[in-house]
Image 1 (cartoon, rainbow, N blue to C red):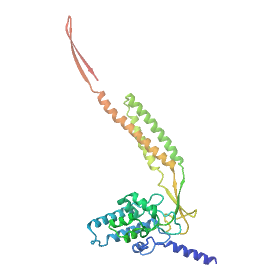
Image 2 (cartoon, rainbow, N blue to C red; image 1 turned 90 degrees about the horizontal axis):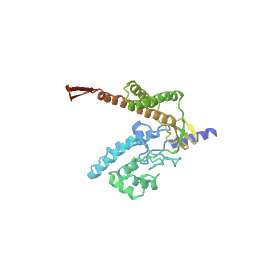
Image 3 (cartoon, rainbow, N blue to C red; image 1 turned 90 degrees about the vertical axis):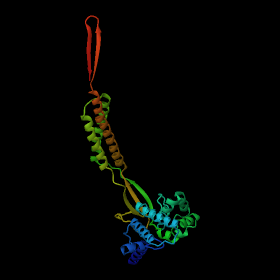
Image 4 (cartoon, one colour; image 1 turned 45 degrees about the vertical axis):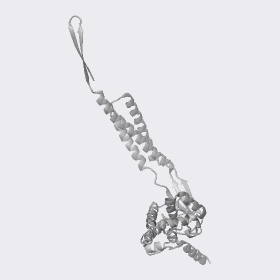
Length: 333
């Protein structure tokens, strides 16, 4: 009984894992590209990118000389936009149908599907959102709206070709953000030391600018201190959001691979280190300020010194009542 149940679950899981990505050509894109079908270890994003690249190439290869010239130009524009969409790599997620792959016009995060992107870029986001309000999880063939029909007629693409472009998406239950705010002791201490030095140097730079001091050591040290603090902040910026995955609330090790149709609802978990990010940007900003003040102090004073050492000479002749005249010369530096 246990073995039979296990085999049944395995079979059911396998059936879900191979759900096709497209309603018209299924997984033809993956099969033609790699000689095999995607499995449960195939990245969801990779499946979508493979499908869009394959369809773009396939549609470009078709003979459309029968189309009017204006529609040929529109078609070319659409396929260029489709390539651009694929390159950007921001695809919607199926949050609401955990039991099956479904198209998703615009998801809760604002990510838009491939055909939706073409509509958005040519007819406007407002039109795309109206379509989404009525047909968020529908296939192109089921979208009974004048806006959709009219756009297809003017796009240079057929309805079947639009349906061929439209991927279906794996189910994502939700997203979670987990704060892992931790600053290492070494980074905290080094930031305090360098930051204190930069603040002190900045104060001395301001003082020298006010008093006209000719000391070059302070701005020179400030340049080095500011540059060091900028480097410290940049190399210690936290990595981009780390990601983990949970299925039905349990963490799973997917090693950057997104299951192509497993049982359960997948939740993306994003890890943040906001405190270290703030400290890093503070280091960069303070370092830049210190360098700016030091540069101004160093080079501005040179101009002042040049003016300071310019000399001038004035001559005067004064008549004296008894002895004649007096000649005077005044030289200033």
